[in-house]
Length: 392
Ligand SMILES: Cc1ncc(COP(=O)(O)O)c(C=O)c1O
Image (cartoon, rainbow, N blue to C red; front, side, top):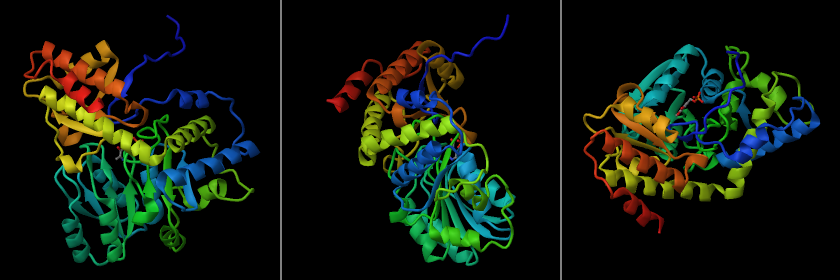
């Protein structure tokens, strides 16, 4: 049989990302490709930067998307800010803090780990202790929204603490941007990165980043060149910087940037506060349904991310069998547990365009049918009215 065009099935994406891509964004992606130095494309780049400043709530001039996924946004922050020998305090309460540690070490830095139990928020007292014990530390890194567990940490307070000890901050907002408040200037975050495929509902593969003056000053004073050519901000800014004169650095993913532009425009049209409120409202509906079924959240209520809901898999239930049936019978994707939580939890995402009432009703209804059919000990017939009460 000859190979044919690939036509993916139409799924409902309720895992940890990617989320459903809005039709307007898919439409933007298919527009004609133009050159990466075409004046019209430069105009689009300038608008993308402005729209990202809105999404991040910042006036940082160095605000742009890296042409690669969220992990490259993370790497951009670390390779530019960490110099060989720099001591970096990494707060870890899930998978992605571990990836930050790798970045510190590979940039020649020394990682001091501050560990919290998975599923719990970063403990400011532990960070303060580490800062006092390591007066030479230069940077504190943290994940605002830990996608592996569905917990959010108080970035504003943690950044304040880091600054009091003269440290710069790197904050991962891959899962938070567009879903819950990220206030880069108000909170004083020095370097921040995100991803296009979560609450921005864009196609995967772009990583918005933003750096303030304090961060840029550290980069300008580097004694050693940035070890990555591609991610070296001094070079990237020749293309993404301001002014009419832009030099070739790499061929930008033109169409992907059309889609990010459209995604950010949708966010601006909705309004950040309204987007945050929608994510919270829909979380409450999902919560009502899941709890009515008898499923338990692993994160305590006040630290829960509305866009990433992690619940324990009921005893005796085959994780893969349930997710497989949701996919094959309902075209519905939910997420498995990662790392230490593999096989123990499901991660149900309500991110961006996926955060809609119709998706929640589908997800809880499908879970009820499949779990009931497998003989799991759940409550039947009560989830729909529980959810409806939140929608009235
Ligand atoms: C908190 C967090 N950081 C970093 C990443 C890495 O992003 P990407 O998979 O786009 O490289 C993810 C992806 O899920 C994430 O959730």
